Image (cartoon, rainbow, N blue to C red; front, side):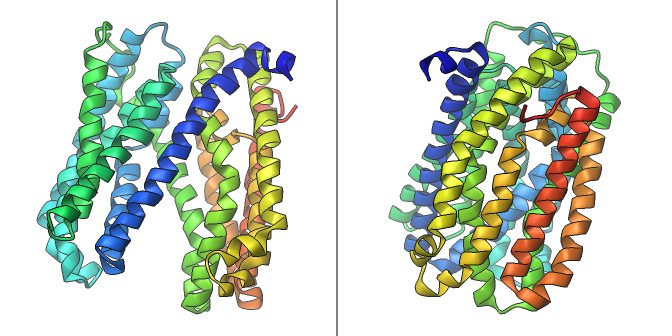
Length: 425
């Protein structure tokens, strides 16, 4: 094992990937604690409004970032030094700033209309106002974090993405609860935490030794590459919501609750994949621009094999103890055991195929990724329409499995055709 880990590629994967995994675990723990604080100190209704506002914020940030955070990593592989990367970062930050001013103005001045006409919830109004105030800096936070991915400063990336904002959020939540501020201050605490972290990140970038260089990439060229990435991300989110939304039409709320718990548990198998995404993106981008496909094959194969080895034990644990795990949420949740097994099988297949979508994004194949996710979304809706009325939550899980298999096999075949190798070997 020592000899294997000492291989150059695996040393990179384990050292950098291990750091990212630790930061993600810390983020999950802090996220759970912060959720517990809101539900216990402010109540379920406040958490419900917080969740609605947070969902709107995340969707807005995804759309109006225009796919530029991922595109930035993709472009940065062609640059020789951080000055050029900083020049591109400047340009992308300006694009995102002006892009997010549109929803910021709409949310701030249209908060009451959105709350009453779209959600029929008067108490949601201050949350939407806060959303308008915070959406620009929160969206720029994602761009800023990917700067440190592109420059392979994974510790700084982990601190600014996972640790610092969650610690700040925890401190501000405690302060809000102790000072008996109004409930909407919970969301103000969240946006303030990420906004402050964003400002800190920008200061770190601009006060380092590298002066911004001038980028030759035009705004049109950036958006031509980034927009398909944004659409892919949007359809990926829609794919994760389709099952639940369609279950809401066919099944009672109790079944939806069971299915959502099964999804959260089953998706734990994707934890390693998500962590490895961060370290493999800049490496693949760099090797693509060097046209070193042999080295790319090696790093992709080693990463995928590592993902498989680390994911299989987690997946088997969930599959064989599915009822026991679900029983922690209540006896009624054990009826979701088969759905959990099916979902976990699908995510295991996803993990076994590796970081295919990001490999394609980093190698100028983002339009293909977009088309695959759109096709996957159509397949998912079709199978849900057929299987949910027949099999309930198990039908939804089966639709998710079929979609996972379709998307991942297609991505692997495209990688083989475009780059000349399979992700696994």
